[in-house]
Amino acid sequence: MFGLTALELARIQFGFTISFHIIFPAITIGLASYLAVLEGCWLKTRRAIYRDLYHFWLKIFAVNFGMGVVSGLVMSYQFGTNWSYFSTFAGSVTGPLLAYEVLTAFFLEAGFLGVMLFGWSRVGPGLHFFSTLMVAVGTLISMTWIISSNSWMQTPQGHAIIDGRIVPQDWLAIIFNPSFPYRLAHMGVAAFLATALMVGASGAWHLLKGNDTKAVRKMLSMAMWMALIVAPVQAMIGDMHGLNTLKHQPAKIAAIEGHWEKSPPGEGVPLILFGLPDMEREVTRYAVEIPKLGSLILTHSLTGDLPTLKEFAKEDRPNSTVVFWSFRIMVGLGLLMILLGLCSAWLRWRGRLYTSRGFQRFAVAMGPAGIVAILAGWYTTEIGRQPWVVYGVMRTADAVSKHDAIQMSMTLGLFVVVYLVVFGAGTAFVLRLIGKGPSAFDGAQPPLGGPGEERQQMRPLSAAADDSPSTHTTGS
Image (cartoon, rainbow, N blue to C red; front, side, top):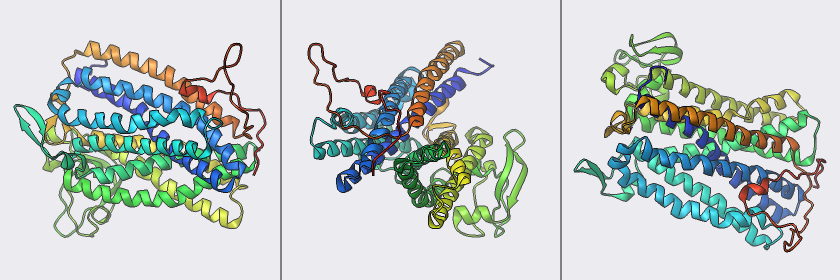
């Protein structure tokens, strides 16, 4: 396909499938915690607005959860089909970490998910709230194990190589590897931000359409509080993560910054705002620079030194052309998130948060920004690790299975078609649910079932049945 090798096609296939998969768990993590907050507020205040919002977002959570599970199954199989040598070499570490996720997080989520989705009128409020909390905790535990596994691939430690295979020596060192705390915090906050932006965009869109209800206003208000508080925190976490990457993965930092030549001692390194890194000519063309700012950001000193791409052999350099821009997309969107939060605080103080149409359009436009930023950050992390699949230990070229380009082309093409149809339809359904807006929960008792009676659905996605009333009124 297009003259690409089997290795390149395998990487594209993995990147394509994980790009779909990472979106759904991120939103699941954020929505699960948001639902726990909404139900907690409902139990404390008994204000119907929180109950109505809970049931509105519960439907969207159910669809998103289902798509996340389906897309995640494909990722597991790819380790055996496309990356069998990696599984043979490092499976003694990555296999148990993924198994721990299933034994702890997935079982916890599955155990309480049914009660959360279908038990509102069947169990007591305390037990139902506990179930929602357990699902939320389960999503966070799941993220912890996955990030630990991936972080070990970025900064491996706690192992030995015996007879050509990795053998675990210290599980605490493996799990709590050097990049793990920063990447866990960064991903967790990113999931909350992405969800807040989606919720805020939903509220702003309904206000623009004239659906000005208390529930819609509450959605927008809660989302903007999250953006105001958490977006600056994410910037600080990103700064700490950058310092950690500089220490453990200097080639990645060199590729992100696009620097090729050493600056004179004591002069400081500029920040290249924009440019086009050329991997063949070994130069960043059309560079727009700010003197000394690169040193200040990454070393917290105006004269600090930074690694350059020419310090590394050509075969050890990440693709700077890609990560240079993916990183800047992530940072640029992060700055816009901070701006959105500040604008919301100003308008809230002025009493215009729910009436400023310009701000509402800004919030709608920022709806997908969290997801795009997550994808851009993930590309920066994974492509910046290349040419290593386990950094400094195993090259990606040594990890791929022995397939030919024709086989990889066929499966990649099939994945593209199936994913666009299945997840495109799922995404369209989610947008349709969001477009209906929150409505008053009628509190009807569930069907009893039995001969001739309607039966309660038993599938998680059935919790998202499109049975919302046409009206958009909610109590307060």
